Amino acid sequence: MSTRSTASSVEITTPHGPALAEIDEAPGRRFLLLLTHGSAGGVESADLLAVRDAVTGIGGTVARVLQPFRLRGARAPGPVVKQDESWTALAADLRGRYPGLPLVQGGRSNGARVACRTAVATGAEAVVALAFPLHPPGRPERSRVGELRAAGVDVLAVSGERDRFGVPAAADASCLVVLPGEGHDLNRDPARVGETVARWLDARTRPGSGR
Image (cartoon, rainbow, N blue to C red; front, side, top):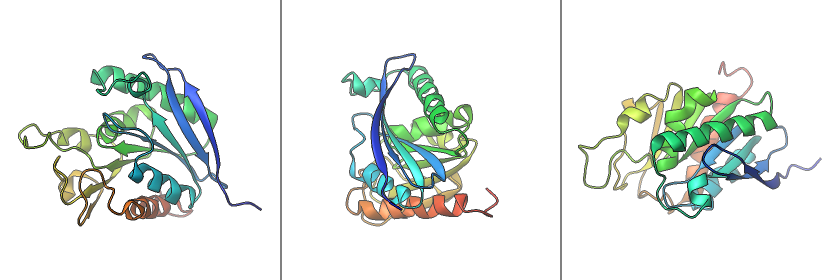
């Protein structure tokens, strides 16, 4: 029996334009993980690819989602309400394609903010927040920690110790992992990022884990 994942691309309609999901289906399909990018990024960043590789390796089907604003070429996400409405719609579409699978959602930077803000609305069981941007660089008084704390589900936060956007405190997430030597891009050792996420999700979704 093959243990390789299978890949496909799916365009998804949202209230604010189409999104594009790059889906890697894992044999066994233990859970569905939705991942998305930062404000000016895409789904090919080193950390997102490393998470995909590690998570499909433990049986998680992974959808890396290019949000509508990036698909139309914008570099700024626009109003929070529209971004969250689009995410909630595309998450519902993807859940419908994999009925019965537990949902986890996450992303890097601005994508982590979206995942935290919409977790309850989408029915996610947990959030993976990579390089959560705690505040704009040099502006700690403009904290976004409320979004992280108000996710309403367990959150794994993975940050680099040198992140210019700040590093959450241990009390801000269910599990905080701070990686030495890493900055906001989490690209010095992306495999370590993937392994960290897969280890946490594997423990949560293993039969008998109580989650």
